[in-house]
Amino acid sequence: MNSTRIHFIFLAFSAAALLSCGRSATSTEKTSFSTADSLTDRYLSLQDTLVHVWNKLIHDENERIRAMEKVLTELNKQSGEASLSSLETRFGQIKELRITPKTLSNPNVLEEYDFAHESLISELMTASSNLSIINQPSFQQLLDNIKITEGQINLNRSDYDSIAQAFNAFLKKHKSTLKQIDQTCNLEQRYLFNSVVKK
Image (cartoon, rainbow, N blue to C red; front, side, top):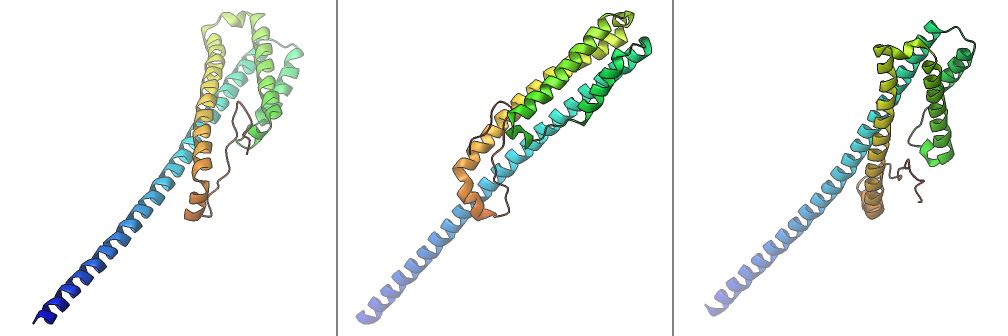
């Protein structure tokens, strides 16, 4: 009777130990899965934000180009000066210029890009000031649009740099874990407008 009771107690403790181990393994699996999910969600969220801010930047770049083109068209209507043909040529070249997240790796490219835009805008303003069209509200609005979009572009660049810095810090901290989660992830750090990212 005593040996049966001892045997029963031993079985009960063994079953409890096995159940406890099972729960511990399941709990560990759940924690590990949740961590992986959380890191992946954060990674994708940062990526999406970068794309969103970049698209806003490109939109404002295109708005600036459109405003510049309208100013040039109006100037051509008002003046038949040969100097405008050189502005048109330069404007055609500027329309082809594009900054990408990759070209930010070379600060010289960005500097040349900005100089090309700023110098042409300055010359458009100078050409406008010599004509009566400068007093027309609709034309003045075009010039204002150029200034407004330039301000917005600078804000978007600052926003992009902030998100890119957060993204780069996140990668630096979790790169090895993210590689284990998904080997197809593009884990390259992002270049900034203000500086070149050192890898």
